[in-house]
Amino acid sequence: MRRIDKSLFLHYYLIADKQSDKEAVMLDSLSELEGTRAQLFRQLQDLGDLRRGTISVAYRKCGKNNCVCAHEEHPGHGPQYLWNATINGKSYAKNLKPGPEMEKYRQETDAHRQFVRLCSEIVILNEQICALRPIPLVTEADDLIELKKKLQQRFPGRSIRK
Ligand SMILES: [Zn+2]
Image 1 (cartoon, rainbow, N blue to C red):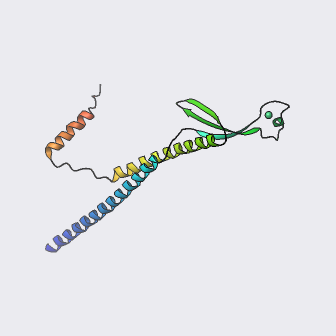
Image 2: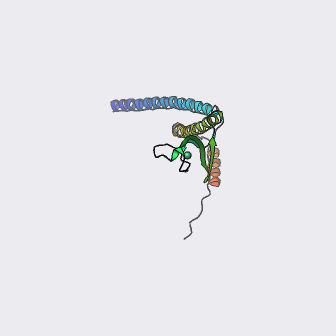
Image 3: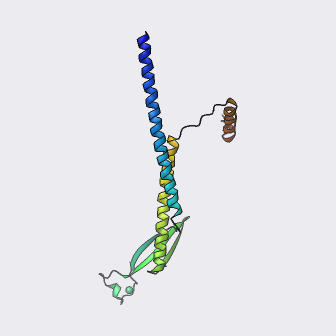
């Protein structure tokens, strides 16, 4: 009997030990993820001016029969650079002069693409952090009652009509 007790104790001891190892690993990756999150927020701050939309290049045929572009193998006049964006269902467009204006738009639209990518990375990272972050302990009975009350007020629900 005594022998069994001892082995049981050993068994629990091993489980407990493994558990704390696991917790240590979890906390490790938690602080690692928090570090990456801080980095991404810094990258967001460094983006500079941003603008929605894309820049495209077009060659256009002017439609005049006597123009050089009327020839089948002629690509059309161009290149013409165009910025366009669809914002709340409305489309916006602007011809861009190659040079500083176009470069400005290129940087702004690139920054916006980066912004969108960083935001989705930050959300994914945060959800990993949420999954690893332990649930806080509430040990005081009064605090627990208060907390449950607060949650019931926040989520009152409704009765279902028959
Ligand atoms: Zn033409």
